[in-house]
Length: 237
Image: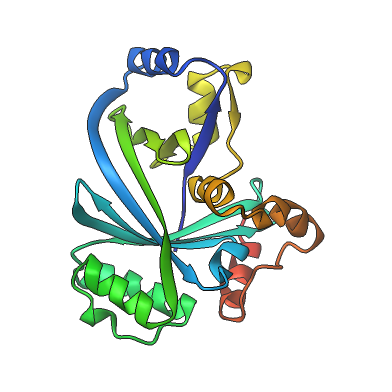
């Protein structure tokens, strides 16, 4: 289990100005790729309703990765929103299959992860275990890197629009953003790309009430098999 160290940025300055800014600060364009993110959920959208997601990603038409993400509210932390991420590359090796096994345990799948070799076989496992893959996000991603472990991703997402994210290996994302932008030039994105898609395409609005539910009961979305994980998070600052 890892803390996802990224932040979504809603720019209040033109995108071209932002790109000029980051390139002047040492960020270089590394790649431009076409991605396909296939999200899986139960028929009644249980993961979505519990601030979690399950994804298979392709890059330029080839298998790339899988991931499970979930947001917990941990009031004891300085940033109370802890974004957990369990991920691995496809094709799967022994190391990534360990992470896949963690994901299977979390979402109630009893299949042997050793049976998974590629994206199609993993999709088959999800479908066989009662998950549907209706939510598909197609996007073009431009990746910038400063050579110091900091990455900026600019996504043009079908049915969503332009999304900017900053991800840090070591540095706190908020500190990295403040080094690049003045307060008036940005605001923190509160909705994930998947939520924006679900709102615009499916008309879902459950996510708009998540914050209030966290204020009322910080542990409302903790499943029975996550109690130990949540208790550990709640004891670490």
